[in-house]
Each structure stands twice: as C-alpha cells, then as structure tokens.
Length: 525
Image: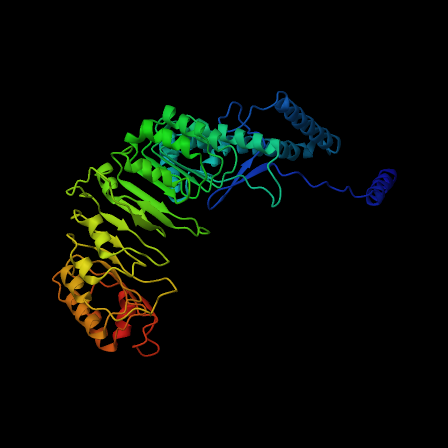
C-alpha cells in the first residue's frame, strides 16, 4: 500500500511540472454572406447525414474511426473499474454504474431520433412559412441543416417563392479572390436546388457574377429586382427570355446594365411586361423612348427616379406618345425628375389619355417647371385617379387642380425644397379643393403653401362638414394656420396624424407633430 501511494504522489508531481499546451486558434468553419438587411452565415462543416441536399458528401471512414475510438474508451473504462473492484459483495454497484452510462448514451440518440420524427412535416412547413413571410427565405431556411426533418421541410418549394440575396462580404480595400468567387458560385448552386418554384427574386449590391445568378433556371419567375448591381450584360437578358416566360415585373433602379441587351429583350418579350422601374441616366433614357414606341403595350406601372449624386434631372417625355403606347397604365411615377414635354409631329389623337390611371407622382426636391396646362394634358382623361403627388410643383394652382375630372383620396402638394420657399406671394383657392374632395380625401399635405388665414379656416370647415369623415392625415407644417382653426380641426373624428410644426401663427408649445387621437384631444384641451 505504501509503495502504491508513493507512485501516485510522484505521478501527480510530474503532472504539475508539465508545461501547459498552447491551443491554436481554430479557423472559422463558416462562410459569411451579407444580405440587404441581414447576414447569411453558412457553415462549411459537413452534415451528419449522408446525401443531404444542403451539404457535400462526407469522406469515407469517418464514422468507423469515431466508433473505434468510442469502443476503445468504453473498454478502458471497463478495465479500470474491474481492476479497482473490491470483493464480490460490492460488485453489483459497479455493474449498475456501467449500465447507467451506457443507457444515458443510448437514450440520447433515441431522443434525437424520436424528436426528428415526432413533429409532422406539414406542421413544420406551416411554421417555416410564417417565419419566411416575416424574415425572408434567406438565411432562415438554411436551418435545414439541423436534422433530416428540418431539411425536408425547408426544401419545400412553397417556402422559396420570394428570395433576397445580398453581396458576399469582403474586407474593405480587398477584391474577390478566385477562391472566393468559386465559393460564391457553389453557394448559388446550393440555393438553386430550391428555385424551381421561385416567384420573386432580388439581388442587391453585386458587382460580379450577376449574369451567372440571373441565368439560373427559374421557369415561374414573375418579378426580378437588381438593386445597385453592375456588370449586367446582354447574356443575362437573353437567358431571361429563354427561361423566364412568366416574368412581368423588372426593377433595375440604381443598377448599371447593357442598355442594348435590355432593348432587345423588350422588343422580343415586352408584351409580357407589366411593371418596369429604372433610374434616369444618359443611356437609360433610351428605355423610355422604346416604351413610347409601343414595345410594352400592356404596361401598368412605370417608375423613373434618379440617383442621389445625379445633377442633370431633365428627362424629355412625349406624353401623347406614351398615352397611345400604354393605354393600360395605372401607376406613373417620376421622382426627382424634371419632365420636359415634347409634342408629336404627326398622328396626334386628342381623345387618347390614361383612362385607367390611379396614381401620378411627379415629386421633386428641386424647382419644377410643371404647369397647369402640362398637368391637364396628362390627366384630362383619368377619372379613376386616386393619388396625386405634386410635391415641389410650385407652379400648379388651385384652379388647375379643381379642373381635374377625378375624386382624389390622397393629395401631396407640399413644398419641401430649401430654395424658393417663402418667395412666392400669398395664394387662394384651397377651399375649392376641400369642398370638391371633402367626401373622399384621406390624406392632405400642403406643407409650406402660403395660403391666407381666411382661406385655411374656410378649407378646414369644408372638411368638417362632410357627411363621411374620411380624413386621417393632415400636414399643415409651415402654413399660416391660426389658433381659431384648431377647434374646427378637432371635429375631425378620423384624424390620426396632424403636423403643426413651423407654424408661425401658433403659440409656443403647440407647434409640433401630433400622432393619435388622444394626442390631438390634448391639443384641443
């Protein structure tokens, strides 16, 4: 016994004097991709299931090695326990401990196996569908690597109707290496397995491999958005024409693409396009000319905007030709663009217009040259117009708006640009608009419009006298509204937003934004 105790003490002393091993930092076992508003972290480790859709196949012999190691450890434990065993009377507890250890290991595997089969796949798909609607398909559906049940549920084509993919994250000042580009393509090939039922696809901030992404086989693709992408060639549009015959919405805002390829695509497949959105530019303006020639006869939505750093915002537009080419247009937006109206040399149809137009937006943050006559030429045959956005159009008058043949629900007429504010003379005629649209108006924005105090009070009274109280939002920021008009505004029971900021004729403490009916009631008290 004394000898065995000495040996044990010497062994402990040797362990103390041994140098501690320095652990090397492990390399990250994942690849990070950045989405539009999220990070996509894809693990590069292999899955525990062979033949999985999500991962590469495992190397042979890995399971055998692990099983061999496990058996070796179990045998060592048994040998140690049998060597240190006491007389026969105390041998039963040792057997019970061995059974407990083995039972714990077995039950853990059984629990994992049962958990993967206990929940019905249809129920899990419904749960995933709720999350996908709120968070998006990528990166949430990468959770299919959890187990076989999640893999099968996440592979359901119903969940992959809408996908948004951002650019691969790269350290600042570095470019994509060939290995990184290969990983990106492998990731796209991995995602493309679930694109058979893809309906809506968005690609953001990609500078390379855009053609490779767009050329994926998506027969049911209906909407394509390329935001801040560069290097889009004619091959990408050619593949869209071959593989995506259901495509009807094309959003190319803030992206650089080959205009000739898009023009060729519109000439061959423009009849299926219902919505098109692009940014104003020297080359991109040819798209509007092609649309006015009639390459998209069933177009329902047209939106043209400008980049943040653009200076030249003038865009020549022939309204008569556009009315003849797109008679089914419902939404027409030209944001921060100054349209220059051009006339037709021949073939003018005075009866043509936009009979189905529901929304017109010609908002700008700079000076606008749009006049009442120009507005009448656009909307003379638009009785279904409901939304009119004329922010920044200082040359439009109340009489010009009152002559429109429509019943507006939303009128945005504020002046938000810094220059020219306060330089114009006082205006009149707002009461004619509120009297005409008092039954239908839901949102009214006349910020920084210099109407007289009497005209504002009369206009507010017409809104209160309407049988159906529909006004929900009222923006009077920077106007000459007086305290006498506030009790009249308080009679609007449906009002939920009231902006009285920068109103010089109101006392201090009142000039702010009011949200909610309770906040507006406190203002009246």
